[in-house]
Length: 625
Image (tube, helix red, strand yellow):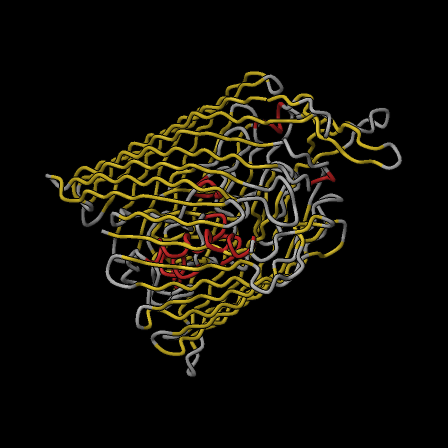
């Protein structure tokens, strides 16, 4: 019964999305080649015309699958991404670029093109953001530093929001979980103006196999738009993220306790002006963030000695970009400046700045569309970085396209890797029992850099199947890992640049529309990636199978079978999981839904000896007006 109750809350998440209208461009449900994307180049182009692999999770797939947060959408619906719980963070990695410490996914997260990776950890938690007002999620693989700068080492995730219809939704899970959201959109204000408000609150309870694994989150988004799109428009956005989650104690054998928690809170404000004509477009953005991160620690475990370690961080950025269009070329140029600071009892007080210039050109010569670009960054602490990139897209015929790319990118050492001074975690070491492991930063760290190569081919076959295959290679230099450097202090660890890591592999996607209401898709990824350190293995395999029934007399459904294996201590762990979402739309206003996670109650693991959840049931109801 507990598991059934859980389902109730999850389904709630699925149906709210169903209440939203699908994109007019989405002919295919899964990775529509005609879907528009901006993540790879900062410019608008179709997936089929991209020079690198791009996955787009459409609004239609989001609402059919029943996912509630961006985290769920990425880790379940995209085969090229791997997600794992961590002792204090839940992170996502791409194509073997495994995170060797808690907070370095090596991915850059954007919301409507604006970077949201913070200064302290260099990351953004997609668990904090609901999907109730998202148009699509774009994932562009390969080095993206040529136009975005730091942290776009393995790829770029761009979360594209939309002004959703006004609606409300709520769900419940029997084990104590709940979710709710409300959206208000006033689009009839004078002078081409709109006001948009979206708020969401949810609690994901402990799973039935692992204690202290719950998550709580609150999210608020306020947006005001003045002016007409495509002419001269101002946008004002405020976002509030508040996440509170338990520590499961996975990474490096960290001992879990029922009282350890991580609570990041952040406020983001952006002001943007866009002006356009037939031949050019200009954008000026001012963005800033203030935030606090609190660690609630029981030290040592089970001692009852609970304390908090606070961090404070600030960031402000100014970005100008310009696009010029002609019949055969799109030219993009820009500059940005960022100021970042962090303070706290175990990091001290530090301020950094970064200045950058970038230039990119896209050409079109008949069937051939090449691209070349580069960016120069100068950082006050780790110096200068040059990030070039080239690529091409070639239309072999009306139904087939070849793509290729090569580039260099980097991940900046985040401020906790640079300045951490005496952060303790606890390990169970036989025969000594639970002992402290103390972590230190290193202010001399260099950025991680990567050279990446990719080839891909997309083809629509005469029998209706659409295929997409890609091969990739990456070589990461100056990998940043926790490393023991003093034999006389065996329980101390220091962040160090420790060497080079290589990964290579291939992916395959197959899609088929059976008829207008039914579509199937299968995907597989194989990665050959040696360990970056003894704890940092990437999954060698990832596979998904999806089938969706769309809008058949008010009913819709989505079944996902996934093999989200993880790898630790040179051993593959995990299992095949099923996710089922069913919802019904009774009229133009009401939706009802049911979501079942781990449909067959399969044994599975978050990591070695860390069990994952059993079957979970969520229910949901939503109303639109």
